[in-house]
Image (spheres, helix red, strand yellow):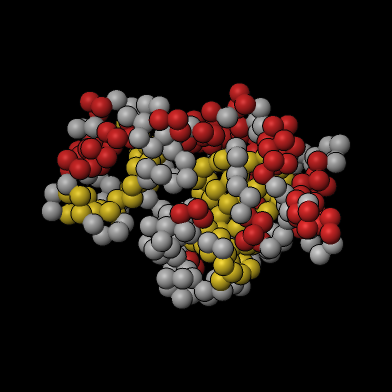
Length: 318
């Protein structure tokens, strides 16, 4: 290591193409993400309605709870969904406040962990969502109830209880980097890296996985199941790229993270979007974002069609 690299490690990282948080905020988020559009992604209900109007595939919305007096009536409305459902705060972040119900038993609800909760405990949980316990800034919120994902069987050996999701960074409508996030016991079945999920890089060209990263370690196997996480072919890869690229046009933001899940019957479904996607995707891919973003940033115009933007994404990733 050269002397100046020891004194200025940020320059060394930039030389390797690693994008730092300050540069991400100043050169991409602040420049390309107008704040007036943030509510379109920070509010999952708005995001879902925009997607549904545009014909983008999303998990079916069963209902919305906006005020406390609606909670009691939930039990009757949810009785028809024997395959289970998911309850989530509209303004939640980082997977906080998400409750996955797999079915009903002995007058209560069974969580994905197998634990049974009573109707009163379920009502209390939804009430906490409305009071803002899980929302950004602690403001009053509403609860979304939507279809539970029956995830693609290819992930059965590399996921613990929860549903893996595919995070793609999209810049000016062009997918630039992707990873799959695999739930673990440590993450309590959630697909968030800071909670202990495994991040696995994906070759943007063909949709095959690389090795993964778990906390600060490189891993070849899922820590709970022992399943091999490298070399998996992500099903519907071309559809996932098209879906990610198309989502950018929904919310007026130039730099976003798009989260997609794979349902066994329905295929790729857009779960949510993020205006401030994290940078751990670089570790999962063992590659920096900066060079790819700089190439796209330097372009005077971006191809208009999704297919052309996918072709551009692959040419940059090669």
